[in-house]
Image 1 (cartoon, each protein chain N blue to C red):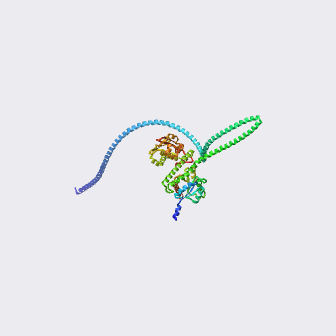
Image 2 (image 1 turned 30 degrees about the vertical axis):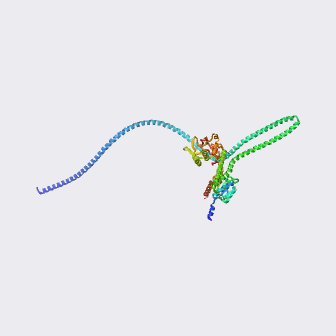
Image 3 (image 1 turned 45 degrees about the vertical axis):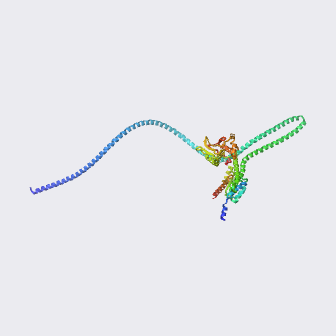
Length: 500
Length: 140
């Protein structure tokens, strides 16, 4: 072997080794790549395996949930089966109801047809009503104008009515007076009858005389003379009758004017009497007040006596005026809402001094929820003033007075009870009459007018109420007054009643 | 001097018109002792004349007078055309027996104030004071 071949062989081998190295390199690179790929694949497998584990766990959980859901579904299935059965039953009911509804639907269809017909009728009626409404509108306008005219006429009539009312009262009085005159006339008629009888007897005489005439001429002559005398007598009688007729005529006129004057008299008398009494009151007041200089005790005492006597006269005139207003029926009644308790309390307050002086015990019983009543304030005040002042006057010291106000049927009942001297039995029937004062009352209070009870009885009874009493001598008295719950009626008049 | 004049001008003059001399003297005395200056007239026509001439602060008119009664006099004082006393305050003196008719007439004539003759002396003076106050308020 030569070197060349060895070198070429070595070169070949180096070439082959290089090729091998290259191949190895290549393979190694491939292996590296492959290793990397494997590594990645391994990672991927790892992650996949993790994912699979997670998924497996999830599946396990899901499986458990599925199990519980399956159990729930089982329960729900049972419930649903029950529901299904109920629905089946309900379905049957619905079926029957549907059947009935079908019937009802039929009936309703019929009704609808009927209503359609009725609607048509209604339509035509509505048209007719429209026409009637227009006519009524016209009539309404006409009615309105007529109504206005009537209002005017009504006002005029009301005025006339008031005038007629007063005229009617006058006529009433005149009618009464004429009744009296009728009596007088009847008497006169009897007198005339007597005169007629006289005439009759005269006529008889004439008849006799006439017969006598038939016999003698002389008798005729004397008879003729007698006839002349009789004729003259008849003339005189006729004149007398004429005079009597005129007297009756003027008597009538006098009675009429007397009656009209009577109304005026009371007012004029009160005016004339009051003026000097007012002067008395004024001047004694000024003297007592010291306006004309200081007074000594005697002077003051005498002046007080005068003042008291004057006050009594004024009270009496006030009472007499009220009596005349009540008797003539001219007093007003002006009802307004009144709280009876308040009026009673105020009347008691006015008597406070006397009550305390006499140490009288006052009891008040007011029923709960008493309604206010429509009444004339003056009349109510007078009632309380009167009843309380009587109770205070006629009850001995340390006695008691009890006031009760309560509902009683259709009325309010007021009662005033005292533990006083009472009213003697023989005096009781006259208690409410004018000027009546029982003997025991006269002893206890010489100043009273005796008219108070008369006045309140008349006014209470004329306004729908009642008044009465119970009493026992030396035990006490109770006075009762009722006022209708529906109230007093308004009454027109020309005068108000006066309080003291 | 000015003070004295002022005093003079604040004195209130009151005209009493009443046909009854007793009433005139009585109310005149009352008002006099209360510090008023009082002038008198015995009938409605004279009263009207004096109201026109003297322009009193207040006219007290009795209602029941013969001839021109209180209502008529008040009507003439108030409503006569060109009457110089038309703004003089007027009050009626009435009895307690004042009829409802008279009350209506009072309103028609435009007089709203009245004093009852039967009231106590104190009340009479109080009423006069009140009426003068009201009249002042109206004219203010």
